[in-house]
Length: 83
Image 1 (cartoon, rainbow, N blue to C red):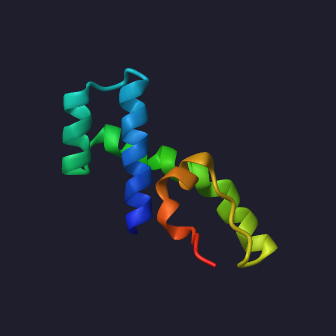
Image 2 (cartoon, helix red, strand yellow):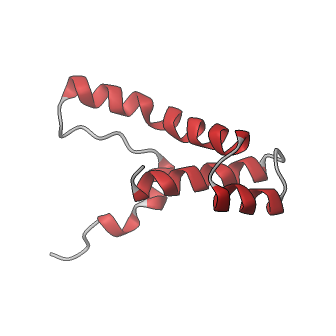
């Protein structure tokens, strides 16, 4: 799992907490231990959000990259602001 994917899973763990599916203490433990059913659920949710864009990339070519709003928040440092 690459660093960006780890961040996406972390975002999904936070969403589980926001949705009331876990407590803040449980969310911290889930993120720390990186195992268990709720971690698996967060990983599945993160993967499903990107699946459509990854499949489209296969057919539309390497240059196509679908980005969700969450991706734009997670990867702000990849955008160059210098000219």
